[in-house]
Image 1: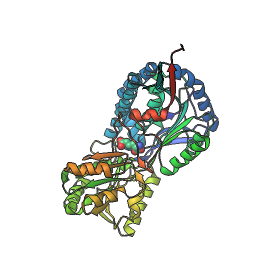
Image 2: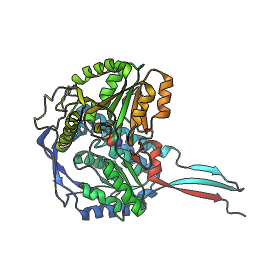
Image 3: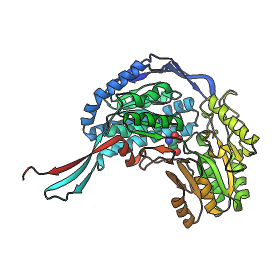
Image 4: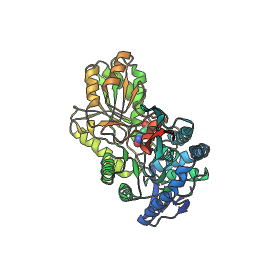
Length: 484
Ligand code: UN1
């Protein structure tokens, strides 16, 4: 297979990077090179920010319907390329081909949703206490936004930041995770083919060092980040020091709660999908399971049957359900944390078979379910970002919800019950940004807010109308006729 050439995109032009060599490998076959090129250097970052600053006023003046039309055309281009780009996504990131293609189609759906923003209300009108006056609340772009995205959704997360940024009239400097540059290039290509003017979106392939510099760059007006908690907090601090807004979507340690009256077969299927799809590398993945003691035996046997049946291996094969982790270091970290937990009293209660396809050196970790000795075990609170599900029992809903609420994170949760009263208690009691009742903890529709409670998220929510809170600021207009 041809090696794809990696390029940056600055001021409307593809540009070879002036920095270190970047090699994008296939995590299922680490000696296969998917793409190769060079990272941008600091002067190219500066040029990108300058290009965005120059392009921003013209783009902001375009009627919103014209900006939306670019997104709608890009959505068609993305959809038409879904099979090819989905396969590229799988080769560089490692999720299954069905998930790869599904993610590219999801990106098209998000572009379409934001293209629709031009047809929705864009502000508010209040009545005035004074005669002959109205009070309007209008929305304006913030300017030049730095967008920093993680490896695990190489096109969906970039789109759900870039689409609202653009439709609301901002210019963008986009720094994707350096392990997934190909899909970042595809998205950039689609938006320019759809008619985006030069400089409005600039793609900078770079390492974490340049990402960290973005909130400090004098030409950047706001930063939207998804990634680790440690980096997100540094971004927020750096933004605060300059007085610019930062939105950070960070860690999760999401619980599934299975109550005694749940449909156990359905719940087991959903918990399995939530924990192990994308090899557990979603910030919304289920990594903790709390099961009512009354049904724990039956539920865990249902779950074990499903976990044993998962085929791990080359994610391009239709039969494979779980591909590799993104890197050798994630594989080593996740495996190490599981053996540490076992050394401290945890027991492995179910695993899938070891991988049958893909290279022996591929970054595979077998899906694993671990019973913990108690809620103080490190695995109960530490985010692993891998296919590991930690289990504790509970007596009844109240104790189960308290266990689910333990820890700093509050991104998503799933609760399984057939009792409406219990489901409503979960809505009141679970401290999360996203709650699934009788469905797995991952998944996020484009038209509704997404983001975490507690320490999982910082700043306004993403997606849906909520995205407008971050990508615009308001001007309150006291509008009175010119006559006394
Ligand atoms: C999903 O659950 O489909 O980084 C999306 C992440 C999240 C996105 C999850 N920001 O995994």
